[in-house]
Every structure is written in structure tokens, then in C-alpha cells.
Image (cartoon, rainbow, N blue to C red; front, side, top):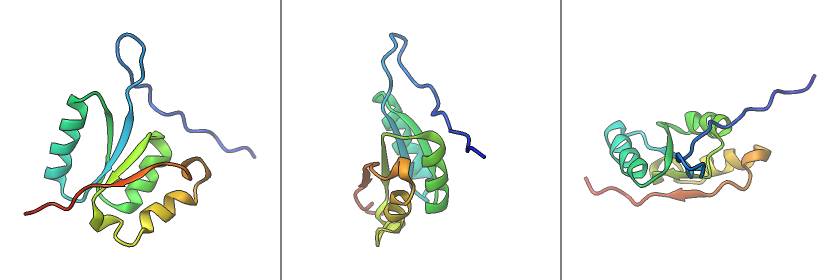
Amino acid sequence: MQSASVEPPACGYPDGRLMPRVLLVDPDVESLGEVASALRSRGFAVANAVDAYEAVETAYKSAPDAVLVVPSLDHDGELTQALRLIPQLANLPVLKLPERKD
């Protein structure tokens, strides 16, 4: 039985250029919304996740160009390691956002 492939959502500008897609991972929903809004205003298509499990699932479904994650959710590299185990995500850049000063 052949597995079905997941098509990434079509995101682009009216002239046909593709928008860079990022997955933003942050358990703080308020901060998540602020950062996502800032990224969208700069031309990024943004998918969100609030924990590592949701991040892996969303990355698989949405095929982002990069993952932006708060350090508390990837403090020992577990999220990055989980993404590396999935062949189509093995080379996905995972960037840690700076620590917030509350």
C-alpha cells in the first residue's frame, strides 16, 4: 500500500512568487500571535504550534521552509531530533528564538 503524499498549502503573492513558509512554535499563545503577525506583515506564511508534538505534526503537513522555536520547547534538542527522523524534514532549518525577558 502506497502512502499518500501531503501537499503543502499554496501560499503566494499575486504575481506568483511564493511566500516563505515558517512554522512558529511557542506555548505562549499571546506571544505566538504577536510574532506570527509580525512575520506575516513581512511577507511570511506562518503556521503555528504550541508544543513539540503539534510542531512535528504541523511541520509534516505544512512543509515549512524553517521552524522558529522558543528555547524552552527544544532545550535539549528533542524537537530538532524528532524532525530529523522524518526523511522529508531531515534538512529543515530549526532556529531558536531569543529568550523572552518577562
